[in-house]
Length: 193
Image 1 (cartoon, one colour):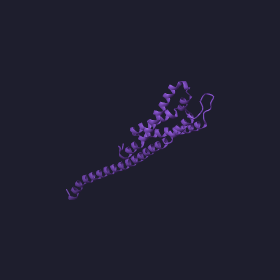
Image 2: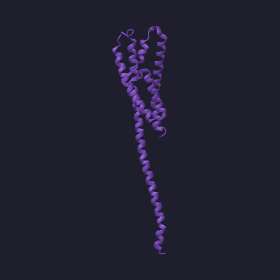
Image 3: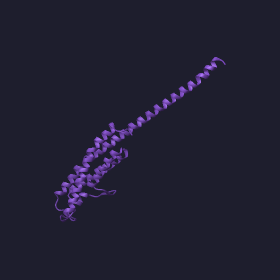
Image 4: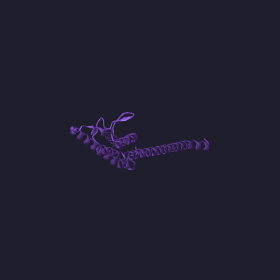
């Protein structure tokens, strides 16, 4: 056999092995590049969801306390007594904030992880305990009215409602305080998936 033919036969497997190795390396690099971009986009979406939830929860307790104060200073409430205008404005503002909290909490629950989704759930649950649950698309209950519309003779029931509202307020504030440190830990030092 000619020496050129023998050299070609010996070189062919080496060329095939080199080509296969090059193809595999290129594939691995493109896979890493794709997933790096996807992970970066996911982290950005998570970061935005956590920041939005923190931002929209900020005014909620102030609005609640302002509405509560307007009822405390009002004359005795009853079926024939109109609700104070200041109270009604605060309730409307609370409803708008509740809608924003609901959306932001949904985004955090969607983005995860479970530890942050649980904080979002606590924020949402306590916000609705204070600001009202959705009864239909256009109406929410108003728990503050339940407290102040109770007849004074039912002081034990009123006391229980006030205690429940105080616990919800404390739980809301505690969950809000936990949100940023937990988000920071997850985004900066937590697991990547």
